[in-house]
Image 1 (spheres, helix red, strand yellow):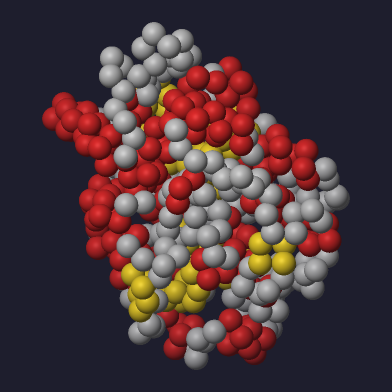
Image 2 (tube, rainbow, N blue to C red; image 1 turned 30 degrees about the vertical axis):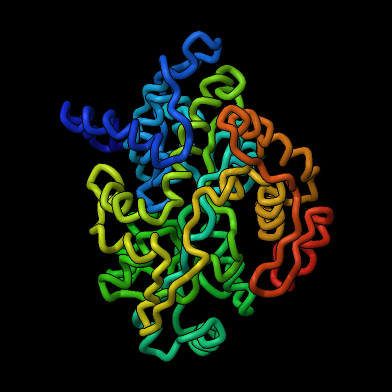
Length: 425
């Protein structure tokens, strides 16, 4: 059942029966065969811990965690899951650390920050793992309507405006967690335009659902966050999208399923069941014909709590930038893509480590591969995929090139860091 970190939303009996009834529908839509006699019955694969609390932050990309509940998929795989609405990423980290949450929708980078105890994470050092990824694409950088009025239309314009106002005012930009994805996208974009995110502007931390309200009252000039909050800023007439993150890096990694290493080691069958449920939900989500209904469900108060129309355009790849430009984006938010999304590709984890190193969160070279092998548990994903009979990508490490043309070669992480003119390390 869904809960809130502030107030529990008790599910009604009617809603429970409706959710249970959707289980068969979910099986049909996912394309996976239904299992009779109760999943794992008599197989020895019964989950060690059946009752779980799985966290999520109110964002569009929490959809697979939520829909696994709504479609009855957790129950299908022998789990009794409470999906718990959380207030902030720091809160998610802390609850995972103390065991109040057993798993969560979480920012890529956060399990690394907790595992290494890196500067800026501020929480207790705790080894965490990524047994599957949740989505690619679907974030954006939003700038205020006031900047648009000043003639800022591009990153180069923003650089000129900041330089022109130096000594008169400090521009403030927000992200959601210092070593998380939104901080890395914001830093990468600004630095690519010659703006030093540690010296030329002020970078602050704001939880995703509070971004729009803070921009409305003038607390920041721009922010990087997941949907629907960029679309909501446009809907409310207070901001516009400067760039989507898929324009920064096509099919980039974003959220993952995070949990402590300790929990995974004690509950391998539970983890396998959890992955299977969320992977199946991910397959459901990637069918465009399902997305209107998904938008309706996750827009509810107990989940993201925003008008359905705010979700719908961007989850369907129809991007209104808020400046008169609209596009049909083929690189919209993806959840499965034949396993390319859900597979916890090791080079993706390595890329985030290079950015943590670049920005001084990691103060000296580390054994990158050792850390990535520890956190990105492709072995656990492969086990779940084998049970489901689905394909698994062959490559665990691959080269990438972001929008600035700088190639990332996972064979040379330190060399990659040194390619950037603006860096702390």
